[in-house]
Image 1 (cartoon, rainbow, N blue to C red):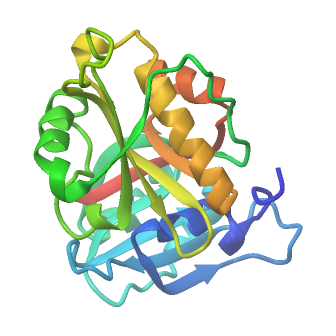
Image 2: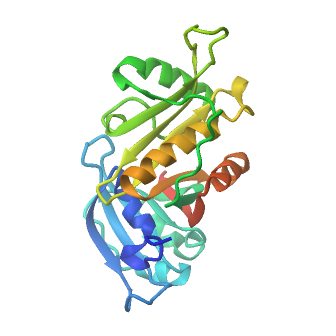
Length: 259
């Protein structure tokens, strides 16, 4: 892979986080391009105004990152901080000082390789958000109720939405209900971030989520060359699908949010 070797402020996770946010400040202890353990923090703001406040995104070796966080002075209320997993055990006092408490642990995955899309795979269509919002919202409520993303609001309109429908029951019949959905957002830094991925529980185990993700990956790699996504670290079934399609782990993180 050619774009995944950066450290410090050039870490792929920093570049990928501009999917929805813009960088307003940054801090690093990096000593040079070969400093693989470099700590780096960027302060992010939501340009749409949908999520007010400041967000901190932090990478690097945990001990160095904990020290660097003590030097960070945000220019507004910190809504959340996403840090390398294990940093909170060393920097809990700093994070708590911003009013944050532990929230979740995530894995960030990336790929530069488009998967092979099988000829016999389920049909994946590009959805029109204005026409299909209600369907997407209803499906995500069943399929992925814990997602922090969704099909409503300005952020949703930045994405391209994909879906899979129930196969027609007879030749020439129209496909039925939406049973799998996902979104792909092109970022300003030249990547595509996948999110809001879900399959109706009644239709799992049929390869729908795999076909959906493969199509979004193929389009994203063709258009931008780099595709990213995040998942809860205990979501083993989804991890198996993503790894089979070619995603690799880029960063293990923990998120702290305002209590």
